[in-house]
Image (cartoon, rainbow, N blue to C red):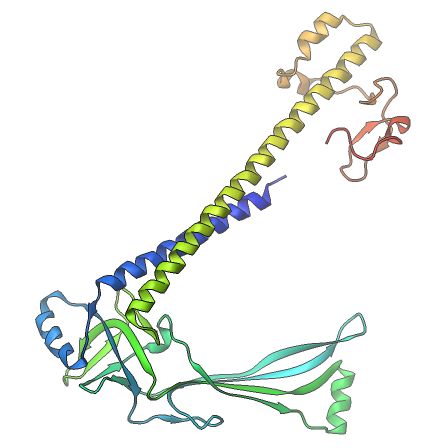
Length: 330
C-alpha cells in the first residue's frame, strides 16, 4: 500500500517551503527598492536613473481621481468598485431536509484612472487590481428578501427550492485612502509619471507602510519555513513507520512460509535437512518457485478453508480461525 499520509506531508512541506522562500525573497527585494519620500522627487530620480531602467520604487500618498465612481448602495466615492450578488435559497436534499445554499448571480468591477497625491505631486497607478496586497473596503452589504408570489413560490417548491433573497456586496477603494505602492516608475510621452507592474520584480498596493510590509513578509516567511520543517519531520516519520511495517510483514511472511514448508516436508516424510537448505528465510527466489502447501499456518496440520474478509487471505482452517480476530499474515 502506498504511504499516502507520508507523501502528502512531504509534498505539503515542499509547498510551504516554496511559499516561505518566495515571501523571504520578496522581503529582500523590498529592502532594496528606492524609497521616494516626496512624489516631487520622483521625476529627478527618473532622469538620474534613465540609464539603469527599470526603476522600482515605493511611494505613498492618498488616492484621488478626476472622475471618481459614485457607489450605488454605500454612497462612497471610489476609484475601484466591485459588486457581487448572491442568490440565497433552501434546497431539498435526498434525506428529506432543507439545507441552505447560495449561487453567484452577478460579479462586476469598475475602475477609473486614479493617482496618488502626497501634497507635493501626483503619480498615476496602472494595473492595481492585479497587484499583491490590494484589499477593498466593504462599503455596503444588503440582503433583499425575495417576493412572496404564490405562483413563483409553488414552482420553486416543486423544484425543491425555497428562495430566501439576494445578498448584494459592494467593495470599494475610496478616494482619500492612504496607500503605499511598490512598482516600476515610468514617464510617458507627455511627461506624466505612472507606477505599473515591473517586468521582473515586486508589485504591491497596500494600506501598510513599506516597513510594515517588509516585517509582515519576513514573519510569514519564518512561519512557512517552521511549518515546512514540522511537516517534513512528520512525513519522514510516517514513511519510516510504513517502511518498518513493510519489512516486518515481509519477514513474518517469510517465517510463516518456512514453517509451512517444514511442516509439509515432515508430513510427506521428506528429508528435513535438504528442505531446510531450500527454505531459508533469505532465499526468497527459491520460495517463490515452490508453491505453499495448503496447510493452516496456525496448527500446520489441517488444510486451510476459511477466508478473512478484511484482506481476502485464505490461510487458516475453520477451527483456528474461530479463535482469531485478525489475519495472522498481517
